[in-house]
Length: 322
Image 1 (cartoon, rainbow, N blue to C red):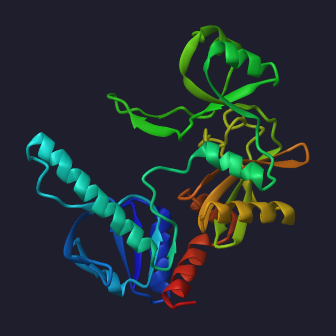
Image 2: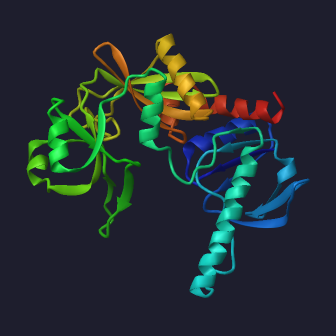
Image 3: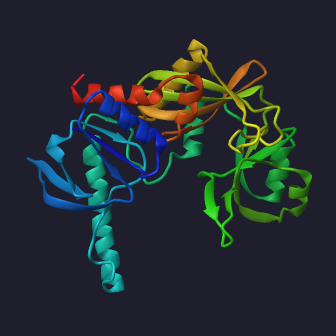
């Protein structure tokens, strides 16, 4: 049996489920919104066994042959939310540590992806990318205007982005927006800058020919070029999507030396799946970041890669011991 852990609304995971059905494989899917109960828990030095109950379905640890950790977290049902505040906090910590360990145990099965409460540290990833010989943008973090001005003199222009990642929010009037998207720093921003501000990530603004999203799966790389430069809305970052005039997206092959460095980076970070963002500028490739649970449907469909099929086949091979 193949276990899928993800979110309720995820077209990519839906497609993988369809491929598993096509190959007539047994699978079960736990979504982050499912209330899950732990039954018959027994974890010791000699034995690991537990049963999870969710949506009137049951999964035992021993029957799981492979796991795809896509997104989310297994939400364990508890009966102590309305307990005394201090006691409730203590019990939540007990539950959290057990849930975390269950995720770790599931990763010990043949698996794709890994459980993370937080995304990868962008700064660490950049340093690791540099170690393997990839070009990265000039990057600095500052919390005061003086240092920013000194650093900015080295570059024609700078962008700023979230240290962690941008997030979506919904306002009281129902409007949906994105906080901390990648943005160009202009003169008006500099004039408004206080002498001290919240630590902020800055990078040189590299004029790109096009952007690249590559999907990595267990040593294989599938890449797509995003022609975002000629659109004012997307020229800084294609993720500032223009739904009225979408960017053209085409399949490309990266140079062998770049692919080798990306594979080494993913291996060093212990990722067997993930999306990699790069840009091409002035005859060179520049590494930006990795998202181990990034959306790859946007690469699969326009490039006809059928990546969901590739993931399904990999899960089947892992379940069969290949």
